[in-house]
Length: 202
Figure (cartoon, rainbow, N blue to C red):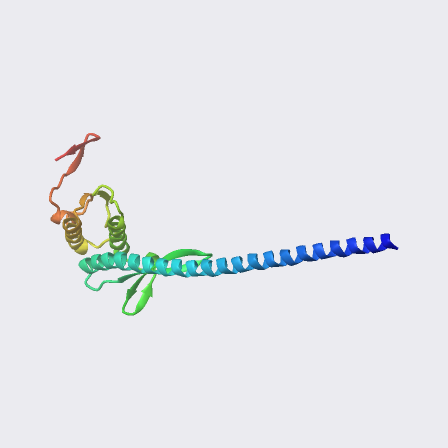
């Protein structure tokens, strides 16, 4: 009888010990859940902050690039397009979509526009991106027929625009071109002629 009572006491003690372990485990799990909940809150706060910073950065980029490109388009065309960058989040990544606006209508750069608009816009966008670099790379930029699709009547304006950007930003442009109108604003002109398969600089 005494042995049975001792066995029961041991079982009760063992059950109490297991019960206390379960209670401690529940307390530990509750603490872990609270920490995870706190982490989730912090992560969400950080995500919102990053989204705000990203949005602000995108707006700044859009403004600085669009401003230079739109100014370049205005300098060359009498009735210019406005250059716009839209930032969209797709598949958890930010994508930049470029479009032109004219008379309240939106146009895709490739296919919907002509007359060298894309030439001028891509030139100005390259300069805008170069200007955003910190530190900047060398301030000499080589261009090969940068305005090949631009109408001859607007080549001179494009040359003036390049000269204006060169003076304002301190960039030296070396341009290879067959367009006489484009070189009117150049500081120096080197003509290259070919004689008997040999190029000569004049």
